[in-house]
Length: 172
Image (cartoon, rainbow, N blue to C red; front, side, top):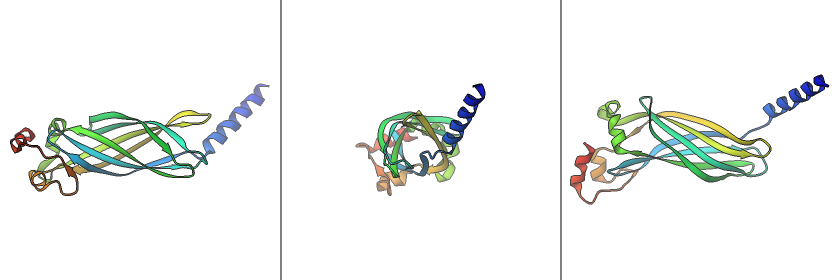
């Protein structure tokens, strides 16, 4: 009897490991908006669902690191579902307070680039198996807005201009 149970357990384990699972990739991270208080990054994630039914996403956990320090963490609750037999594009917004970005300014230098690592955990609810986490990471750099960007209006990113330009002093 013990041998039979062991063989059954081995069979089920083998089938589960061979089963297709949802897959995800971070395809882009870019500055979406910036203002005098924060920079908001937009991470675009492509998620593939091999199943014929939609899969609910419970939440997305994120951590943004620079210089091996977490500079932003958070959760995106209930972002929707992954389309059945298809690809879903998920947008994750990461808001970083500007005063924290100033603390990593030694990495910026003259080019205003900040090296980062974005860690995402996409928690999906698979029938029978329950919640599973799809871990993702991406390293790269993003460019902080310069004074010229602020005065010109952001060049692609949405700039939320202060009503009083003397507020620019708080950036330095």
